[in-house]
Image (cartoon, rainbow, N blue to C red):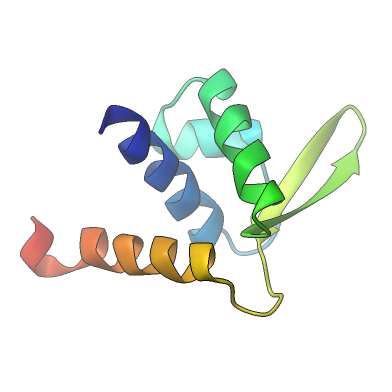
Length: 88
């Protein structure tokens, strides 16, 4: 469950960004270690939930604007639950 929360925190940071966001910026938002963030972003990129481009010496990410996929739909659903007032 702890890893799921970290994954969702990473998703929420990327989704709420006003554009491209770096791992360091995500860490500032959610306080997670950059290693955890990198691991989650690797899987999110593979599942086409986030887009990534290389800006040497690192990558920046954004919430994918591609066609919706099942993984992305489920993550957005979980994020909506976490952000709802009744979740508090």
